[in-house]
Image (tube, rainbow, N blue to C red; front, side, top):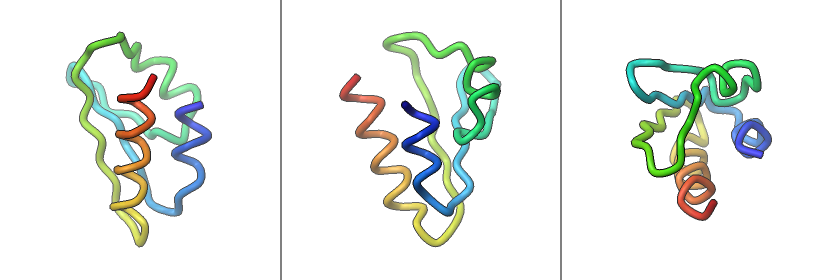
Length: 64
């Protein structure tokens, strides 16, 4: 679901945790990230809709 959310935006979107940085639009990248509930995640976006993208991904991550 997170990859689908990220894919709705034109911006490049990355997630980073524990020194690993992956493209949020890549399902394989997200699988290798190994996100754990309650962990710290950095969301970064670059593009025309970056603010909306970061806000929506943060909303998704905090509501799950």
